Image (cartoon, rainbow over all chains, first blue to last red; front, top):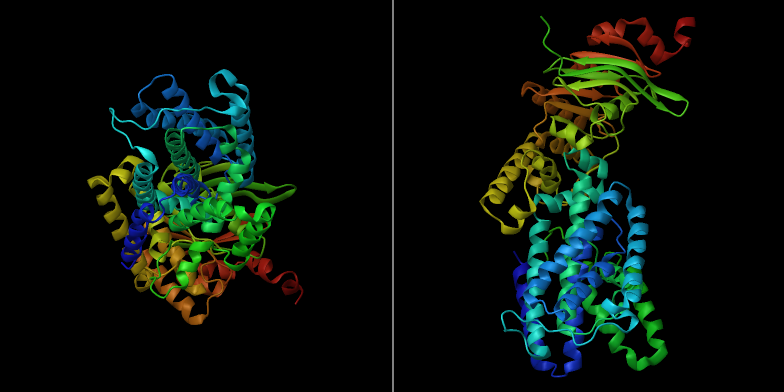
Length: 311
Length: 259
């Protein structure tokens, strides 16, 4: 398995980053990139593997963040919030998924766009609870029985560890009966059915797992950034998450991480260009899609050291 | 005494708008034989196969597999009852490796849960090793074990057809439906296919195949059913069917009668 040296190198770089980048702003940006990576890995279950277009991922992200913010501000201990957030997004994705998973791809896209708008409208208009457009501030931080990360560097290490766990779980699912059933459903729904795969259940599970990834990332977002507003979970964010998946490489966990890192950091790195950054950013995205339709991850296969593995 | 048929269909009817693709077809397939469905283009062969496998449900009729009514059951339920199939237009899973393609179907009989997968517990490991063994056995039958780790799309066309057969076998079916398995194969490849079909029959699997190439069918089939315009026009041993005047007319047209 030649993949281990690469993973070890990635891990080493990830751990060394705070020593090089002393700037708090950069670490904060990286923290958001890591959270986005978790959300995109979640999206990959639904869109990358199962082939269902989902524009509701940002709404699940927001649902997790707001659940956590509201719960901790109401005085609930932090330890309950990952469970609360997961429960809320599971319930929401089940209600949304049950009726729509029987339909084909485009219907889910439409339904999830509508869902995203509903969640955004609730956040904006339920002001006494959600803070409306100005959002929620001073959200209590991560604290497990009084212990929690202090400062951005400690948060960074915690989030890196959680990202590693998210990757591990995704890889495990990929190489299980469920993961194979997901990809089979994407490649040929009818052949999957005739091979004994319950494609409706498989699509629903992928959708729910993806939602839980987003919900948990939202929980961590609220309690590590400690400020949330509707803008962070809008439909523009939903499209951005989809772009991260496509630019990084659909179906590749590695691609999800690369895509999330690139598209979170790039806009900030190009900020000195002022208005022009959008032009460059757009050209960059188009360039990747045209030159490497398989995403940035597919470029890795050009390296001679990769074995002929799938994903 | 004739044994209980493994497939028993009555009055299977399928309409596409005004076109009656299947018009009250009855079909009995005794266990352990190779039965062929032949007929000219558009006679309803594939429509019948789709109705049996649940890929495209019949509008009316009764279909029993091993005594169990499967009419309008979802395809995955039918598959789990022991009816597997291949497709006329190859439908392999492009983004999976050869062995993973087969594992999808091999998992049919090894249910697992998300909990087992996430904890990677003993039950999960047992089920994965079962699936792996069944998948390799199925690949071995069609001679594709050496390509197990390759991406499915790297296989040449004829081997992709064999991969579909391996995938169908991995679910340990009682009945195997083959939809034009020799389509696009050259002579040598067709011969290998015939050997494989004979091997499957001797292992006790009932085979129902739709084939365009009548000559190919006659050699391996125990029974032949002939469809024309959605109706069954003849049934019997290959030699009986070949002598049937209605069959000759369906294939050669009126010209034959005038000649």
